[in-house]
Image (cartoon, rainbow, N blue to C red; front, side, top):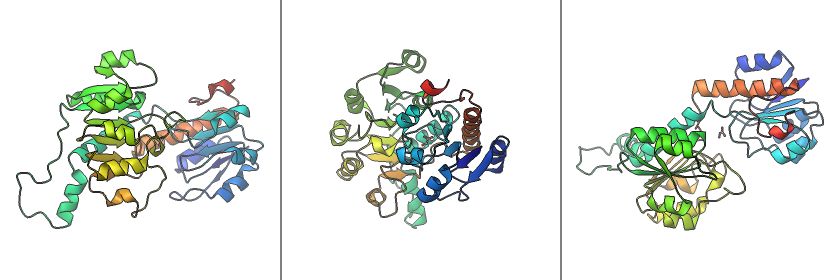
Length: 323
Ligand code: GLV
């Protein structure tokens, strides 16, 4: 049997897979596998170890007549046509849980950095603009005691809420369903999206990417936010109408934005967001701690091994095919 790994992985992960199958690995750590090479390698692949940069659509599945399992090294799986994989009886694995705390940490890092203008302040020193302490120099916005609105109260949303409690924040959330246990444990109040937008000083996007969440925050939603609101997105860029967000940031309708994800990735320095001072931009590193990424890679490999053995995947996206 053969597994295709679409990005260079650490030796320990390759060794784990090599115990049960042959492995083809794209040798580059930074550049995604070319579409051409992916299609070619899928011809005799039994397993696919993929990641957020690969589009696994019907065409890829058509090229892979032997495919028994798909495993993505991510919690999000919007890059995979899961409905089509399910129709073909192919289980799809992902890596939730192990990344929860790392992503919640990064979400808070972005929130604090944006509120307190941390990146702008460092540039101020680098550009030799610091002449003396100033009473209102680089003043940002208070986080302690402010109101945080969490859109998407899944595991990561709860992790963010736990951190917010330590900062004495008032917590609002909206979600497809109410999370009453989380409400009690975290003193979070459930409310409608519009109300959350109107009342929050910080709005954090943590909803998964689905048809329903595509561009769920656009011009109307930005216009509902407080003028001092700061918007944080560590979920998926497609959940937001980026052009509308840029307009809101330029117009001062939105105080700032901290973004780890974008409509189209990667963004380049000539992207309109890079021209703004009131943003902190990161290259999709939400779960990027060494420990977390190694655990994610290991779980992705374990999902593959289970799939090749016809066993239930430890973390499956489409359990209806996991017999
Ligand atoms: C990264 O974006 C992930 O979904 O894990």
